Length: 136
Image (cartoon, rainbow, N blue to C red; front, top):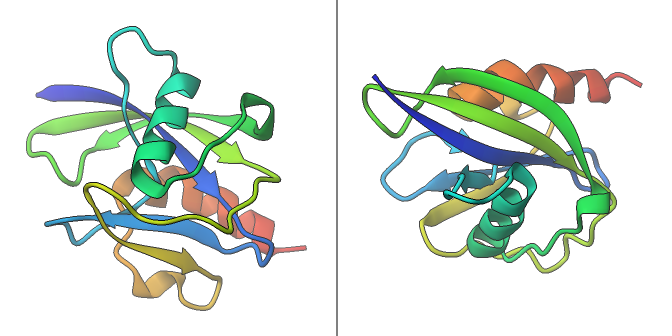
């Protein structure tokens, strides 16, 4: 079995909606982010990927490491994904635009989140964290 390491982000807007993206030729919605390159640390990967995928430039002081989680990859057969997950906080989200391999983005809210097919990493690790943020 193959294994890939990624860095991804939980990005919330002022309405506490979470941003998910869907890659071309995929039915799953996932967190923005991507594969770690050879000499990158996890934040460097996250910064590069968010800029490439959604034109979001982040600062390390605005990111909180949430943890790591390993699960089955949804877009690559016979592959496990080890995700290093961050929350991006207090960032200007006005200019987000999908780029490159991203086909669609969606701001998911508490009433519609069950209508989307979540990638395993987001569903298993981030969804419970995000749902707890819904309860205030």
